[in-house]
Length: 383
Image 1 (cartoon, rainbow, N blue to C red):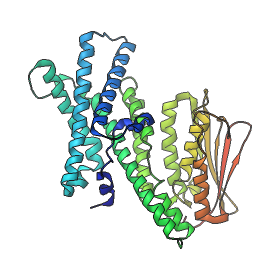
Image 2: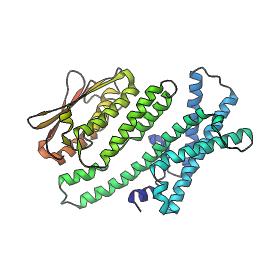
Image 3: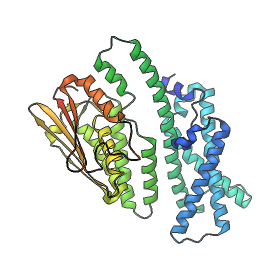
Image 4: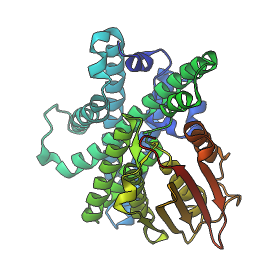
């Protein structure tokens, strides 16, 4: 069996979508814990729906709130037990595991089936009679619920992927320590497997939530954000399948990432990418730029009340590829609630050292406003 599937089926690897919140990761994993977390999640969804209806001037009655609660609980627990059944079946009949643990099964098929069955259960509870759900019973509510369920499905899938990657990372670290003869470049390539093409669940969940909230009031914006998210996922998936990239490949990921954040942050974020077609064709190692751009947004621009801008530029000077990422954020070293340990920059520096040796440099400049990260790479036929 595929080692990735095997890692997901090991005891103690069951996840709940609410584990994206650090507080809930303190609870010891168990079926009872997951049942309680599902109840909490359903309660949050009910509260959000009620608050949304009230904010838009909708009419709320106690019966209406009860209906919303019944639908949320029915759908939530049907989803809960469907996921439990799928994972238990995969563990019992391991030949089916690749199909049952496939991302399309966990993040699309199970959520949509769960929504349909959940609607039937809710209607049966309210009417006292079991019948098939049809779109005449409320197709808008079905589509909206399906969007939320698919988003949660993605979170569950990403959580299991993150757990698998941690397992792989631990094994690889042990192998790296035992294999003293590994060259620096081989070590950097192995470490890249745990860094590249990982979509942060919180980022994905927030983006899908934004899309769901924009569908009715700004459908064009919702469509544009969805297209950019698809592009981001496609480009990062492509990057995860190869060891080589070009400047253009890296900028495609950065462009989609920044456009999604621009739609989310509105006028608080502006960005530009100034790179010629000739420079875009130059080879470079994958996943070097996106962590730096994410770092600039997270620690420089997001904490700044008025926001700011970020500019990415690249040019060739005396056979050296020079890349600059300039933001007008709070500035390097400013203490904020989002301040991290600096591991992002340290990891990029370590990879540059391993891949290019002393020929590559990463420097931090502090202009009048914000921060500028400069990378210098030797131009080679292969990164």
